[in-house]
Structure formats: structure tokens, C-alpha cells
Length: 145
Image 1 (cartoon, rainbow, N blue to C red):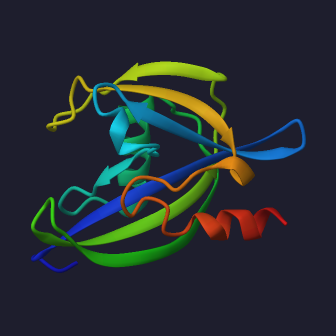
Image 2: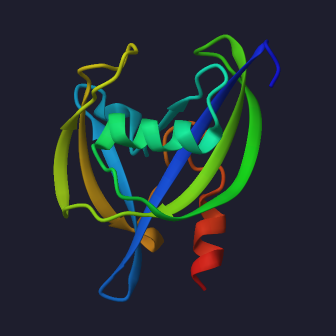
């Protein structure tokens, strides 16, 4: 991994519910204007990608049981917010979660204490996700066919 690049993981948690493919999304309390988001975050130095994925999902949603993890792809871009180049890995996986729930982020990072309001949304009705989070969402739809 390059030292001048930030590496991130993104989780598309999915399920089939009443015959429809659904995606677990959240709105961030006090930042609802950002739109829909999915769990993910920064890979720590020397951290394996799947460990980072599991850690970020646990910190941001409390979900521990993950199944059928698939790497969908990667995407590199320059983040104006971070003022750095970002290389993001996108994963699809299955997980059980309530219809809707609120989670307070538990991490050792700046997002500790942030409040996320989660809910499932039908993939066919899903609006664009915040920033570059939706870069490989079409692959989830393709795999479901």
C-alpha cells in the first residue's frame, strides 16, 4: 500500500426480504443532508482488508455475524474533504439486522459517539449514496439477477 494514499473499505450489507433485494443504509444524526450512507471506513496501518471491513461494520453498526463476503471492486479518487488520494474497496455481504435500529459508533477515531439511524431499503428504490459510497452498487444489482 502506498504511504501517500488513504485506504478505505465500504460494506454493502444485503438481504432478500419478501422476494426483494434490500440494502442496509443509514442516515447520520445531525447530518441527514448528506443522504444515505453505508458502513465503512479507513483501513489501519498493516490491517488486512477483511479485518478492517469487519471492524468498521462492528464499530458503525454493532453487527458481528457476516456471511458470503464478496469483493466487488475498487475505486481511486481524490477527496477534497480529506485533501488526499483515496483507494476504496467495495464489498457485498449478508447480515441479519432489525428492520430499523439506531447505533452509537464505538471506535477509537473521530467518529466515536456519532449516531447512525439504520434501515433496509429496496435496491430498486435506492437513491444515490453519499459521495463515492455507491461506486459499485450496480454490481450488487447485477449479481442478484
